[in-house]
Image (cartoon, rainbow, N blue to C red; front, top):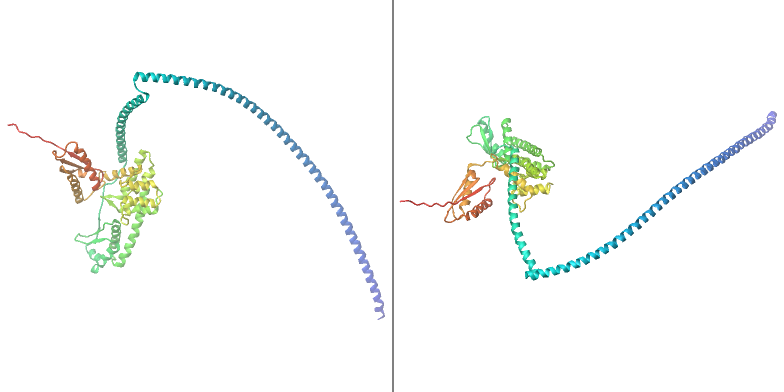
Length: 510
């Protein structure tokens, strides 16, 4: 216990000594750190002073360099200003010299003008004296002499002008006829096409006559279903192993033909199957129409057509006019129009496009009223074709008041394609009716005795009564008959009207 009491003061003293020693050590460390910080600060200050001196030196050098550059630029500008001043001084001197020269020339011209004025006055005085003497000699005034001279010159010029106009008209007509013949013959020589082929009915062969009964079905339900689905008339008669499809719409007739052939090959013939096969045939015909339209545009070299125009163009594959396939005819007209346009120097693309689409209205005339030329013009204009193309389509039958160059080109190509040998054909009944109508038109005029349609309706020869019609009147009669034929009849190509007047005198020697 006594040892513990003695140890406590000792421990306290040792703790105080430790605290004092720690305080001294800490003070020593802080002093060393402070000394080091002061040394670092001094070093940083020295470095800053050194860098400041370097920056000042660099700035001074840069300012000296900039000063030298500025002084150099000032010197160069001063020298340039001196050169400009010298050049301006030279120009001012030249301008002064030119002004002096112009002033001298102006004085000279003024003097000459005065001399000319005096000379003109003298000439006018001399002219008045001469005119006065001429009036005394001729006994006419100046106004009367002018009128006589103008009248004489006007009559001579009028006669010469009329003569020249007749000569020019004759020359131009001969040249135009010759050029037209050359262009048309050249186009025809380069064009080779098929002859006419047309059918208003389609005949489908049957494997046996027993198939007719299956086609008719119980109480005629199969044939009625086929007719209702296709819109055609199915004729089952005594023709062995064949049935006839009759319809004025060639597209419906083609759909019915394809459907009937597939039903015969399949053998399953009932109303449900008929509707299914007819639907497939319609899709197939629509694809054929699209392909034919694209092929026609490709063959004709016409690009950029609207899809609806392509579709309408393909429908022309199944249209015929006097036995001539309308699509083949349109391609032929496109080629001919392009050839004629190249010869005339017109735009070949416009001519080809108008030629290919000139009958496009025939693909829509069942839904739209009006002539096919006007319908085609409206359709092409609505579907984005140029005004020239639409106008040429509307003009190619001469149904408009005006006629553009492309209208003439398409009309000429259409006439060539339609009237060439083998292009068209018509039934015997239609042919006879057309010839009879042609003869009746001629017989409707007074003074006509007989009329004969010859050369398959290409010419009509008319015999007139000589006591009623004289030689001068037959010219007017032929023109009137031709005009009435144009107004009242429809015909391909042109018709020649020949009027014959014959006077016979008979006597007998006894």
